[in-house]
Image 1 (cartoon, rainbow, N blue to C red):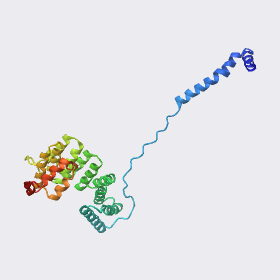
Image 2 (image 1 turned 90 degrees about the vertical axis):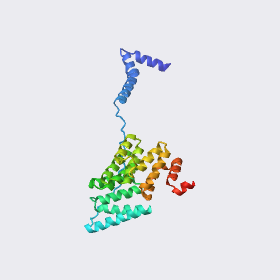
Image 3 (image 1 turned 180 degrees about the horizontal axis):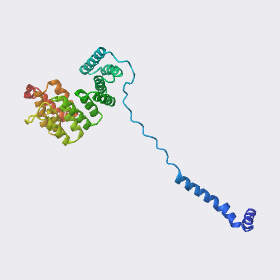
Image 4 (image 1 turned 30 degrees about the horizontal axis):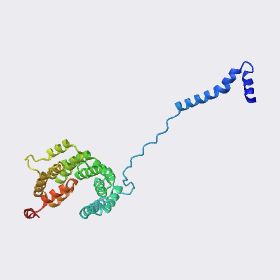
Length: 281
């Protein structure tokens, strides 16, 4: 009670009682509220961290003295021999890549070295790095079909079906009639899901006689099987046996469309010998 009385006397004393009420009871909360409003209105936006940079391909950067011309040619031939051996054995790509890495560090202007490195990295599953290497190869030599073909392989592996189709088409322009390239282009066009793209590329490969040519027969078979017409696909694969070497046909039939149960069944029938088909085995 004494405290209440003292406070009452304090605010009633003299002519400034209400000013004291304002100063001591109203002004402090008003200042706090105003300060809070000003803070929230004027505070800076929280800094947004910059996006992480896209990892770049780890291309060789060590500076080494160039080879003499004859020595460069010898090293290129040795590296390409390692690449051919790796293709034949299905292994040894790390040694091939290492040989080409040495070449590009000493001769960054050489498209053969960049192309071989890109193909080797493709085989090792290092597709982003392969793309970067093959971009350099293409920039240095736009007349080498293998650079475009290998870059198409890298694009397809990375999910860029349309870009791969363009690269395969450029490779075919430089290497017309190559059935491996033709089918890679058609199968990749199927991957894109764009039927118009597939039909356009197919029309450009047709020989105009209505008969399937070696350049696109397996691609058409894949389309028919994907559409559920396995009998038509089987007929086309049987036709492919007449047009393609067995090793080439085996490569072309590695597409996943032929690996499901029905596709594999019809494929086995189409590839069976005439004797086996006649006996039903």
